[in-house]
Length: 297
Image (cartoon, rainbow, N blue to C red; front, side, top):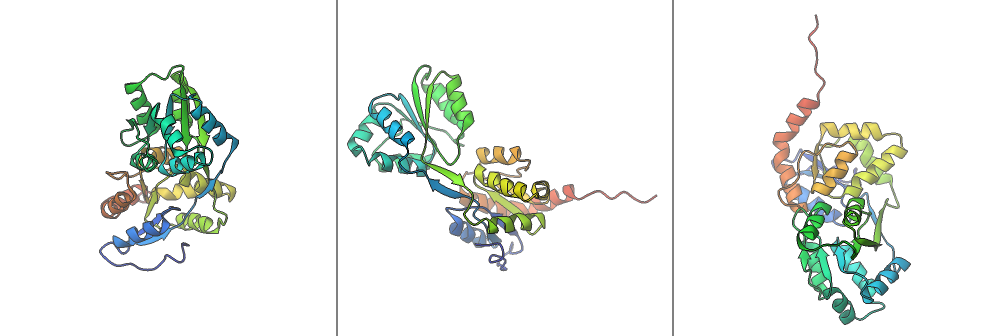
């Protein structure tokens, strides 16, 4: 939905609160959740998932898995887990895949990944504690097994995770990363550009981020349009909510201060707490951001 299409007054106690979010896969659900809390919803998809298909990298992963070359496989996302297993099923039976994985350590990042593995009959024998960042993954590994000299495969998500891969290599692991999809810019960037302009113009009260790649794509387009400094500066007068630590790190790396993370790292909690916290936090942030006026002498 475009920014212009969503500029319709809502109802309820917070009907004046204007919330912009950047969801792609769950855009419609995000809009409904925001409006359910009586806020005005501006949902602008800024990511496009590009499936890589049956790449040589995936073929090699399957061959190595069946040959017993991996001691550990780390699954990072539910979507990526489903896609990878579906691709493997083109060459191997489900029984062979399950047998190969259940004889090694299977690390699952988060509940969605655990559920996706269960759908294929695979049990994660090394789950990762919340908030499920690369730090918790490494901590889980450190607490249960030594990876020095061992083969560790990592199912990557829309972007590579250099901290995780680097941490594994520092521990002496032989790391093999396999990507099944990448995040790209939308084919039509005009709604994204309109969102950037509306943020610069101060047309929103709250910005919600659920992925590190969202701020990366927004910044990339703002930079190409020579608007990046104004775009980043505009967040100083808005409340910025982040779904969790990984997303927050990316926002801060791009110069955007994070005002809150939800008590539970879920979209529904992020939106609910944005609506409830904004009435108190937004005036305080804008008061701090306002330029001080010196009395005339």
